[in-house]
Image 1 (spheres, rainbow, N blue to C red):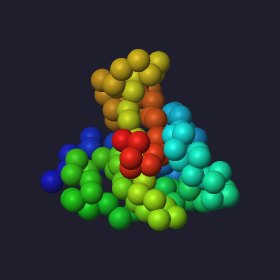
Image 2: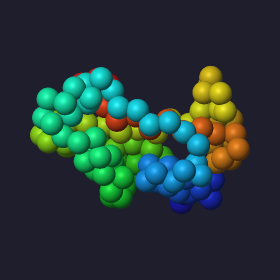
Image 3: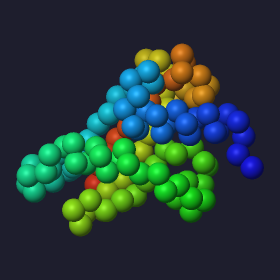
Image 4: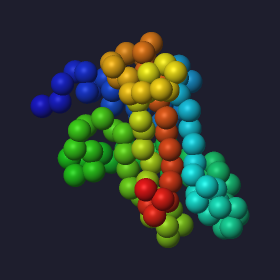
Length: 115
């Protein structure tokens, strides 16, 4: 059974990934993803939508139940997105990831080969 704290983190991660501006953080794409978007002339919004729309979390792809990672195919390229939880100044991990006042999220979208 998933603890209430982990459920809260998962809900916050989902809201952040979907663009909820009340949850502090930053979003990044790697240079490989940026190059892919340019080379294939794909608008960045299409990639963002693929990440935003994901909701099929299972024990296999979300073993910690925090909704913080997915591997997906995007235009025949294996990609990952991940969410990391930092303290307020991004200098280290948050000491209470469920507390929005203490936690800043970073969403990174990358090509699998960049991992």
